Image 1: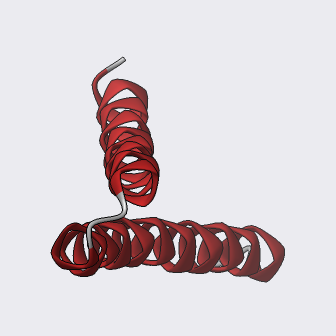
Image 2: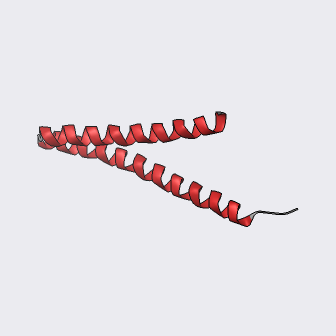
Image 3: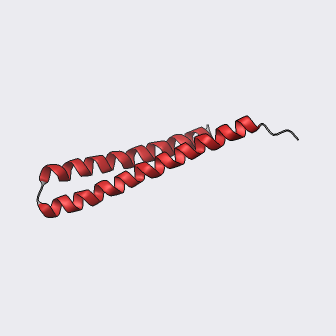
Length: 75
């Protein structure tokens, strides 16, 4: 049995980077929603819209990455 260690390392590296990236994006989305709540209590309307838009953009990128992964597996 031969193991292609270079391919295994490549798969490990890509999956590690993708995992850290997705978790980071999701965390930024949650932080954006938290900032929206604190900005709303302080009465800053511009900050509320910016935080909400950023949070939704992060969640949309997470959903797009997951959909792309499912597309790669199914196709």
